[in-house]
Length: 280
Length: 329
Image 1 (cartoon, rainbow over the protein chains, first blue to last red):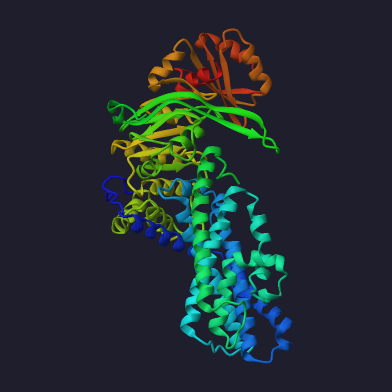
Image 2: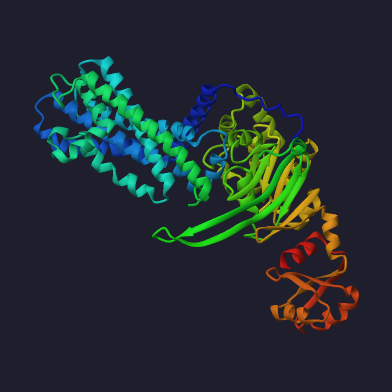
């Protein structure tokens, strides 16, 4: 061993945003390394998307008469995969530390826990993007779906906005896991209702009226609408246009973020009072 | 209220610290209140290596958690480097390093380098500084050659050395070491103790909790003994040992000693306490008594016929003997 003397003194990063940027980057990089370190990453990112797409094509493929309907299916499958990964991955972003034995180290960091969780959630949602991309590739290559989106620029903007809204939603889910060790049951049980409510596979318009308020409160509903409006020629969904969808998406995403940061603050204070956060 | 200026020279100031844990029933009514800390007071000087010792459940971990801002006290005050643990948590966290004992606290599926990079970013170490400091730390703790290997392949001792590096990555002024040698083999534990000594020489303030009395005696300048949530003694190890200067210790190494033999020893007149480890093949039995060598013949005659004394020594009482008296009183 080389001895502990003569180490470079610890110079600190200054500035509010520089500090948070550094933490976000660190959490994204670590989460990515942990994700790829586990060979099972192919199950949610390659195998599951393939199954999603197959099921969708068996359900609807026979009725498909146009390339745009097939693209509708591929986009829906992609978003299902993306949501599924978000709900599992994001809600466990901090819960992972509980069973990994790193909760105390994470909580002891000189930064609000919400920023650590946000960095991890961003990568976990990005895992969903990997998933969605695989579904698109399967659709394009295997099922010969034409990918002629109406407006590539708007499609990209809608996709990025949906990614951010899913991340914000994932951050909100994270607080549920933190509040209760059994929070995983709640977040997992939301997977299928959200598939249905957001219209990933079936149009929201066919939902019963009682379910519509729930659907409208979910930002992905508007993200999916905007993606389809920008991608599918002649698509008629909800009675909103592309920019209205993006506007509602932005408002709801900000509301999720605000609620998540507030809840994180409360959860941290609660955990410090009760001393239960690191228990598994 | 912050401590007066004279006390800011202290690394840690604890005043009347109390912590209660409340258990609630399914309906939310309070079913049980457990007092983990019952108004403890102590102070650690800057640059001091201070030990906190006590049996399981005595309140050591609760104290450490409050001082490291992971838990809120029920009442009382605690200051770290003059900062209030209730209000200044992020500033405190920036200035302290924590080493947890056991397997906790590392990401095993990534490398030591990845762990240190992650924690240096989390603690806001300037990236240019981190690029210089992390290899230096890895070399210092003897992990430079295996820095790129996954931590899950490390031995227990290597993981603990990585813990030390992790705690130092942001160059903290105060180190809180919570049972840093627990579960280590003798060589690994010695390495960690040498590092602790070196850190203290560099002027770091250190709070050490440990189960191992010889470790506290060897390393700490002052020691607080905590029992049932209260500080029952606080002094230098040599002063604490004076609490048991009225006794000598007969240390036996035996083969084949049984629990019945221990009971027989306890019944002997003038035996204050008998402490033994019967689990290994060769057992160690420590008998505290004011009689010292005069008790040897009775100790020998109480031995069962199929057991054997390998070695016997009359020793001066250690910190462990003082500790046992304190926590059992």
